[in-house]
Image (tube, helix red, strand yellow):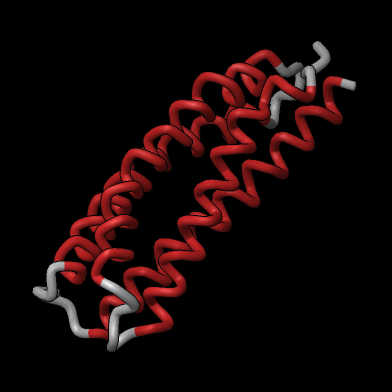
Length: 145
């Protein structure tokens, strides 16, 4: 099975959006204790969960079927792990979104250090996620060639 390069383009585009959002989170984290702008926090808060959900949906609809169809037996455990990570990612996105919303409204319950840690933990995890998935895409393409 040969994977047409354009088939995964929507997923790659979404990864780009997710990485851009991570850069925004890093800007907020770097600006603490003086949050960059309330508007930026609120914009990031509003877009975070839908973007993570869309990314997961595309992975499940585009990438996971390719892993399932592969003749390489190593993909079974990898696929199970990836599926199990999605609920944890969504939970973390909800927590970060709520914290950003509160910060944007000037009523953060978290100290600047705790907020910075929360943001950094999330965006570093998402960056690793994207890197890992892109490596999987490259391997799937190599296996199908």
